[in-house]
Structures are given as C-alpha cells and as structure tokens.
Amino acid sequence: MQKTRDVVVCGSCVVDVLVRPVPLDEPLGAGRLVRTEPLVLATGGIVSNAGVTLARLGMSTAAFTYLGDDAWADVIRSRYAAEGLATGGLLTLAGVPTSTTAVMIDPSGERTFLHAVGAPKRLDKWAFLENLDLFAASRAMLLGYFSLLPALQDDLPEVLAAVRGVGCMTALDAAGTGGTLAELAPSLPHLDLYVPSHKEASHQTGEDDPERILATLRDAGAAGVVGVKLGGEGALLSERAGECVAIAAVEPPGAVVDTTGAGDCFIGGLLCGLLRGMPLGEAGRLAAACGARCVTALGATTAAGDYESTARLAGLGRPQ
Ligand SMILES: Nc1ncnc2c1ncn2[C@@H]1O[C@H](COP(=O)(O)OP(=O)(O)OP(=O)(O)O)[C@@H](O)[C@H]1O
Ligand SMILES: [Mg+2]
Image (cartoon, rainbow, N blue to C red; front, side, top):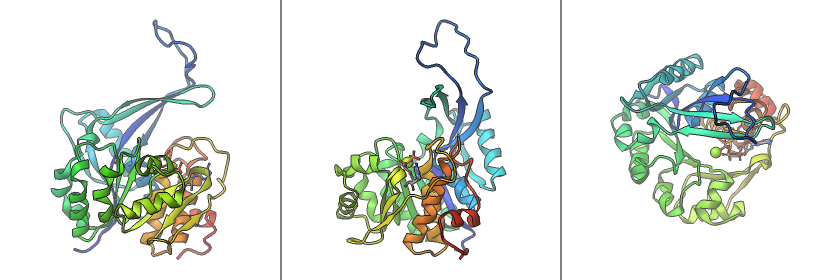
C-alpha cells in the first residue's frame, strides 16, 4: 500500500490539569480554600508528547488511541488538530472516561499526580487488527507504554507482527516499572526500535550497566535498534549485537524546568531521524536535542520546535 503518513503514535493519551502552587506540607482537607494560579490545561502521554514532537519536526503524524465520550476528549481532539496531527484514529469508547491527571505542584516544583487511567487502558489487539489500514498507510508506528496496557500486553507480539506485516516499522516505549523481561521478550523480535529509560530497562533486565542492559535485551531476542535513555547523561544506542553508540546529552537551550516527557520527545526525535535516513548516531543526536528542548519548559512539548532549529541545536549542520 502507498505510504501517506510517516508515523502513527498509539497508546497513552492524557489530559493534564496543572495546579500550582499547592502547599502539600499541610493537609488539604476540612474545606480549606487554597488560592492558586489559574489552572493550566495540557496534554500528556506518549501520543501527545511524541506525536507533537514529530509533527513540529515536520513528520506527517497520526494519533491512535481510545478516548471517552466526555468533554476531555474534545480537548484532545482540538489540541491535536491545532498541532497538525491526524485525529481520525482517536476512537470513542462509550461509557469510559478519557484519561486524566491532576498535577499538583508544590512551591518547590515537586509534583503529585492524581490520575484516572481511563480509556487507553482498554486498548486490545482488536483495536489494532481492525484498523490495520492505518498502519498499512504509515511508515512507522510508535506505541506506549509497555507495562501499562494490560488488555494488550499478552497479544502484543501478534499485534506487532501484524503491523509489520503491512509494511509498518514498529517502535515501543515503556513506563511505570517497565514490567519484566519474561513479559517483554516475546515482543522483542517484532520491534524495529526499543529504547526504554534506564529505570525501566534495569527493572526488566536486572542489570545496571547500560552495555549489559543492551546485551541482555539482545540475548532475549531484540533484533532491531535497542537503546537505553540515561537522562542528563544522554543515551546508549545499538544497531546490532556487539555494537554501541554513545549519544551525549545536548546542552539544554535554557534552565532545566521540568523533565517530564523528555523520554517521549527523545523517541519522537529518534524516529524522525531514522525515517529521514540518518545514521543512528545522528538520529540519536537529533533525539537528544528534542529531549534537551523538552526539559526547558513546563509541559513536555511546550519547547518542541521545527526540524531546522532542532537539528542546529543537535549540531547536525545543514538539513538533509
Ligand atoms: N537534564 C537534561 N539535560 C539534557 N538532556 C536531557 C536531560 N534530561 C533528559 N534529557 C534528554 O532526554 C532523553 C530522555 O530523558 P530520560 O532518560 O529522562 O527519559 P525517560 O526516563 O523516558 O523520561 P520520561 O519518561 O520522564 O519522559 C535523555 O536521553 C537525554 O537525551
Ligand atoms: Mg519514559
């Protein structure tokens, strides 16, 4: 099938309401009135964070997940449309709420999350198998988060094989604990790209050293590009067994304000680089620049930018 889209981003899609400052050193109960700044409405989850990153980098990007039939779904649809994301894959699940989080931020910036998982948790293999046309028309799919999609997890190898079967590259990100290697291993041979955070990868592999983490993922069946995100220290990526490329962190273009979502922005940048045909080291550099931009603003994609300025921040020279 003719490819009309670069990436479909699938899975976690959340409306965030940011409340600050909330003095969390005293109980909030007993009818207390706390005066705050005006509430800030934002979108989160991998569909929002990687999706907007990719769209701003100029990639043709679609969102695919379940939303509820509530007012929060309208917030997601209108914000994605404003970012240029295709919204036809945002499916309504009646009687189930859209995923929401109230983020309470104390005066020091420390965050407490009040989260209702809602509709995306219902994603199962049929959601994907009944919409394979969307993947057939796309060059790549990015799904998140492994360990937080209980209705899909056991069938994930089958879904990844089906998506690949229609000529669509597969990428996965993890969150939460990351789950176990026993749970992940059946999916690894079906992934073209898997780059969890150090915390998730350590939980999965029982290893701390990034090279040993990657070797363990290879031994468990990973055949595509694997890596581990290392926060302010960058990332380690590997194209094939025994070969690693260290990606240095990019100096953030401002003070570090909020690191939430840096991992999603990194994966968005990495996919963009790979789909543009860059060697892994350069794609990793573009990814690190996306992560570095993310951390300079409140909200994962507030500071996300276009390809030219991000490539310049990454030191990649002229656009390819
Ligand atoms: N303080 C920082 N300075 C520069 N770059 C950073 C910083 N924090 C993160 N990054 C970049 O973003 C990438 C992803 O961050 P991180 O390793 O925290 O991912 P993550 O744990 O999946 O994040 P999250 O799940 O919170 O989005 C890093 O590999 C790095 O390139
Ligand atoms: Mg992450």
